[in-house]
Amino acid sequence: MTEFEKMTRGLAFNGRDETIDTIRSKAFSLLQTYNTLPADKSYDTAVELFGSIDPESMVMPPFQCEFGKTIHIGKETFINMGVVMLDGAPITIGNNVLIGPNCQFYTAGHPMDYRRRRQWETFCLPIVVGNDVWIGGNSVICKV
Image (cartoon, rainbow, N blue to C red; front, side, top):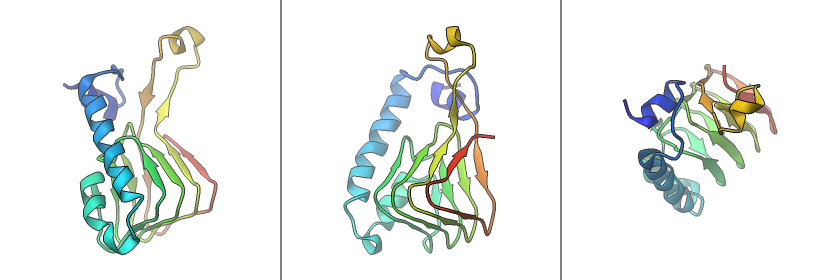
C-alpha cells in the first residue's frame, strides 16, 4: 500500500513521501491555471484536478486544495469563491449543494497527545456532504 493510499484511508502515513509530494505538486500547478481562468473556460482543468466533477457544477476561483484528486463534486453544485479543502482523505460533495464563500473543509487531524504531535503525526478522515445541502459563508467543516 502506498503512503498516499494509507493517508486517504485514515492510516498513519509519511507525509514527506515522494508520491504524496508529486500529487500535491501537480494539484498546485493545476490550481495556478484554474484560478486564472474564467468560469466558462475552466471545466477541462477541473476534470484534471478533481477526482470527479459534474459538468453542471461550478467551483469559483480562487479555490485551494492540497491534492484535488480526492475531491468528488456532484451534479449542479455551486462552490463559491475562497473555499479551501484540505483533502488528505476524500471529500465528497453531493448533488444540488450550495457552498458559500470562504468555507473551509479539513480532513486532517492531529493527536491530543503533544508528544505524538511533536512527531508531526497526522491522520485524515473523510468528509461527506449530502444532497441539497446549503453551507453558509465562512463555515468550517471538519472530518467525521
